[in-house]
Image (cartoon, rainbow, N blue to C red; front, top):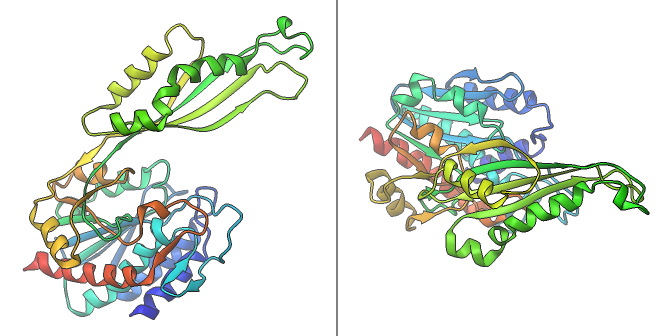
Length: 351
């Protein structure tokens, strides 16, 4: 089983699937594998970022994940798919093609044992999450006995995650020769004043005390070194705890920026998610894996699934700290344990 999961993961790693990639290749591969295992597969969602819903039988456990990744980036010391000891390296090994490979391999085993279950795979989780919005309209999701989102948790059941509030700030100015800045209106300087109002929210000490994080993710401004900038744009990523809402976050930002001149565009929001760490399935996972429930700092598709099914859980292979980093890897033993967890949980809910 170990070699099969590794082979499947290496296949997935060989297919680029960041949001600038053509997702059709990885969708065709995954669909073919799930159909070959004996599952019925339906494609839903937008053409550019399709999603797959694969089912065997009715009303079983549903295992979910995403095939898309952030870009590979540069300065890697390891090759994509390279194995070193008990680790396999590559973009998506932890977040989260490793879990997807475990699902694909477990599918054949569950079909052979005639255990009802389902698998949902999306290709736009890192950004839009339009695929899951289409998937949750399906009866198979609503009627599933539970939904396990296999994002990286180091195989500990996670019961709480933060919400997301992403926005873009734009300041506009007037170009002039840099030797006579008083003839222009510096957009970058205006942005400096805006970010200064938010600076304490982005500092580590504030984040530790409030639970809300703010990251100035990208910044672009100006055209040339000897020209006063006439525009500047900053993208900001906020993660917030379940005690707050998107309206709370917006109020904080707008109040902080009062008096400054800027444009603000909200690009994406999703609410925080929380489940009961003492629920039956969560306890089953803890007992089987020998791990205690945890809280994760990232966001998943959980709120979308929870809107239609009350039994949503998060647990998967990979250390969350390794997601999106250079030389990302997953422990091979965790992939094996994830495979066994899928089989165990699918059988358990059928009781």
